[in-house]
Image 1 (cartoon, helix red, strand yellow):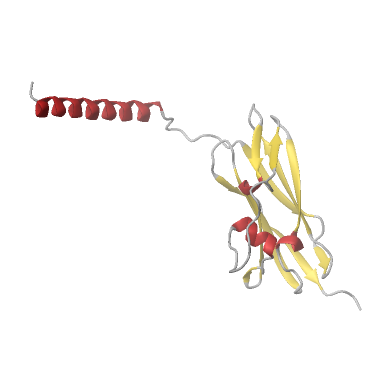
Image 2: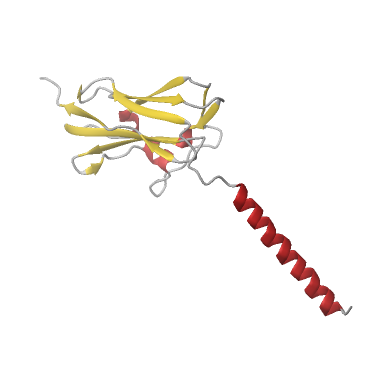
Length: 170
């Protein structure tokens, strides 16, 4: 057998094994949608907040699986919208979203947090919204959160809750 024939035979075998492997892998993948591993919801501690006070959003996540789930802090995000779209962000929010302005620095890699929930457990994270957004303008705002489901890797969105920032009484 010549070198070119040997090379052609080896190449044909590699292609055959690769194609066969792809076929096997595609057959083992589940065609049905995997059920959500968590449920998510959000609430506010107050509907009306005087400017200068900290509005608090409360994110609740429930583990629906039969095993422990871990949610890294980069897997959930709070969003606040006002009359003109997203409220002005603070440096903390820009760091979380990666939307830094020129000259701003990112967080250190060791400043991450891991949130672990046992099967059937519900956990709560509280967000001081003024830490993430400039809420010094009076008006109506809405808040929601997005959380990546560790079981499906899909992004889940909570309900949307309204709150109002009010001028302080003189």
